[in-house]
Length: 102
Image (cartoon, rainbow, N blue to C red; front, side, top):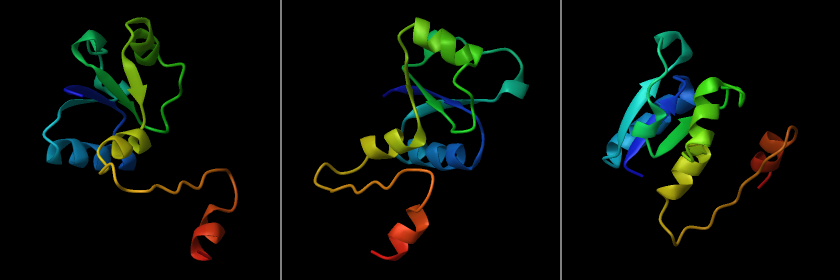
């Protein structure tokens, strides 16, 4: 991962950008209200914030060009040490209750 387009500027994007900076990865932030869509071919990864719908033109362009689209969970996983075990709790209901009772 050399050059990342961070799509969306919410809370998760802020944390992702801090991680990218810490790891020395070049990134560009883009939000829909910023105007013209950047040239997606300039990036090897698009980091999509959770609130961005999958039908956005920028994401369609990235898919057509074969550019990988990931989220902040995938980004964090890629920078984790390889000897760390991961437990993921997903779903609509019960995550807080499950984690509080562990």
